[in-house]
Image (tube, rainbow, N blue to C red; front, side, top):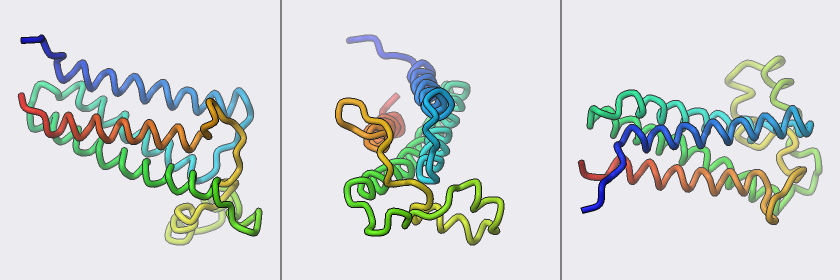
Length: 164
C-alpha cells in the first residue's frame, strides 16, 4: 500500500495555490497596470472563497465531516468561478457589436447604484470584460482562470467524495 497524504496537507496545498494565483492577479493589476473588470473581480472573489474554505479545511481537516463540508464549499466556489471565467472567455471570443457594451467599471457601479442594481450588471459583463490585455501560451487570463477553477472543482469533488 502506498502512503497517502494527510487531508490537511492536501487542503494546505490548495490554500497555497490560491494564494499564489491571487498574488499573481495583484501583480498583473499593480505591477503591470492591468485593471480588472467586474468579471475579473468576481473570479477573484471565487478564488478567495476556494482559498478560504481550503484554509478552513487545513485547520479542521482532522474531522471527517468538517473536511467534507469545506471541500463541498470549495466545490461551489470553484464552480461559480468556472462559470464566470467561461462567460468572460466566451465574451472575449465573441465580443458584442458595441465595444462599450460592457459598460462602466465596478468602482463606478458600487459608488453610484444600490446592490440590487449593480450586482446584476456585474453578472451581465460590465467593464472591459472583452479586453485581452495579457496572454500566456495563447490563453487569456480568463482562459487560465477557467482551467484553474476546473482543476479546483475536480480537486474539491475528489476531496468531498474520497474515502477515509
